[in-house]
Length: 369
Image (cartoon, rainbow, N blue to C red; front, top):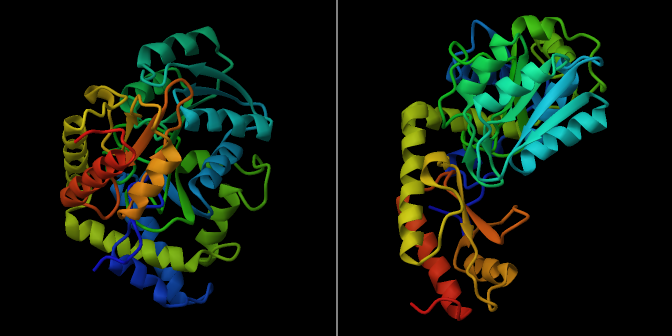
């Protein structure tokens, strides 16, 4: 049975299953052999999802996904490296901000929020600036839900002899990424997204030879992925206090992931959620921001109603009172709101959410339905 709390239609934290929450009822000792086995099992299972067992290490890190993104850039980009940051939303801008704070040289290429970065763009940029050592890309830009062409961009980056760092926070576990076919140096994800765990742990898939060569690069002790991996390989333990309950919850969530049918089934459910959401919202006259061809089935951005009586905060509170939590828009030029398709939800939840949205807008006298 669902708890009394609202269903989270957000890109993480998201609604989790009762089994996943119950997995956090047990307290673990951070040096306990049983807990170390949970950590080892997690790392192995995550590598299998990305087909990276032979080529990459999986290095977990305490904290949100942004912690892991910063750790990856700080560990893998040497002090004399230069990062080309591809931007078409807020999380691409965050990548650039991380480079700035870490003192890593970087350049940016920014496209419109409804336009994917293309492989041709990257080809031109790498030709123009041979000093670039790394390219940083957000696979699914969560500020809109846009899907960038990872495989095509990765091929261009590899052909130029550069190294690709991928923020796959909102895509890993649902959208297929195969390390045997898509060349990347690092790919970053987190526990509280498409795997349907709880937030609190990021993880980075790092090419083995790149991690071995990264000693001394990091700006930080706590966020040094090279040191984190070396310590885990030697002892089986985390260097510092681990997020024990988060690890246990993610281990349980992965059991359910495989029971559901793995990545194809997870993608199928999310795609169905997205299709139902788009169709039901269209009936209300609410338009999605992105065209279908570049809309990932993760989170959908909708244009806000063009009505002076519409205020997002009032709309949000009314929808929440009916059992659903939405996200505000993250665009600068148009007013929007976002509805997530991921988490332990199905098509019935999506229909109920749209009914709640319709009722809230009627109460605000924005819709006459």
